[in-house]
Length: 385
Image 1 (cartoon, rainbow, N blue to C red):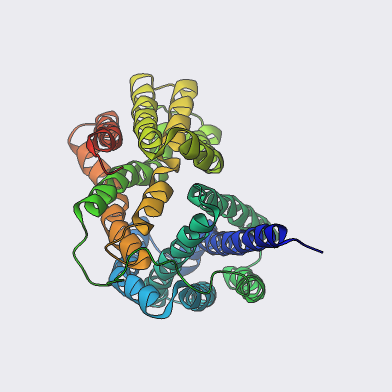
Image 2: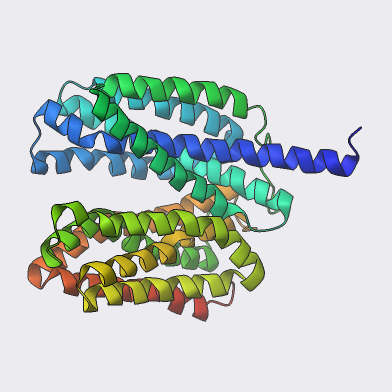
């Protein structure tokens, strides 16, 4: 027979696996869409400019959902929001593959962004609860599963393209897979969210500590967004590498970001949140300085790898800290920090373009390096971390 201690440990592990599965499912759905963007662009006959306009509808949907997500999680609980929004998210993925015009794609992407952020706020609220059960940092490992799902979704997308399978059939398969595993995992995720204070208010001005956490995440997300959108351009236009090596920087960045997330919790438990955030900012700064100062394939690749390690754990650790606030419900606190941080992800890439247009891409990445170092500066000056 299982002892009470063994039974409790088993229950915690099952809950952790179930919540991790939700992170994985969301990451795979998002990566599945990303892997088929070129196919959908070609099928709809969209120019680069037209595609850019269409893609903007996704972050618009995300922004619209930010206040709604925190409110829903607080009112009906993160479990219900996770299940409903993740199922909706996967269904909308299928409609993206069915889009026959740019207008239909815009509508589908708007709701894809809206549902995706609801999943994001709810699963991070679940993760805060599981972290409370374990009494140690585990948030970054959940985000590591999301990154791992990104690789999996991209690999499946490449395989589907090789077989000539159209996006709609591909996405239907992902939707069915998601429905099956949500049905299984939803039985084991947390039924009740943790209570971090006596009064769980939803609509309240974020405290100074929450705003600070949001600012730290904002600076890191600017750097992260820059890597997603400009790493390939930097390698192609500045380094002028052969086509086969254009994606080297992005690959190094993604591999470092995913792998570092699986050790960030251990590092946080050993050295503390402040020191890990300080080190994250320094890694981001050093990585970008190397890539800018030595514009050659090997050093730039190493530089982008360091940036991936630097930005990897900032957002999950900030979400974890926000979810433990005593002035707001976990869902509302995470939504507040997410709102601030997402602006960094949104304005980072166009800001780089504007600076690069006025000066050069190397100068613009130097500015991003300064913002990365701000993570260290703000973390150092903040007593509440």
